[in-house]
Length: 101
Image (cartoon, rainbow, N blue to C red; front, side):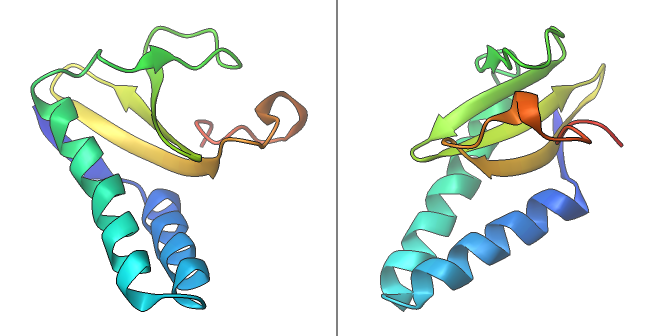
């Protein structure tokens, strides 16, 4: 299955990397790579992530790379990484939701 990253998801990873790099560029690069590596597993197992509780939609799923939630949408022939958000964020209280376009 093809994996596509949305612009907000790419920006989120870049921002996470930049934030961590303030303390350690090495750790920032390693953590960004952990996020990317976790996503590549979805090519073979697209429904391996749990359904996002706030979305209540079987197609909107997430995998956790602590402390971040990688939110993705499963489509027929592709997986769209829609955003990467901090796990402490209450998604039920924000609008628009990370999976809404």
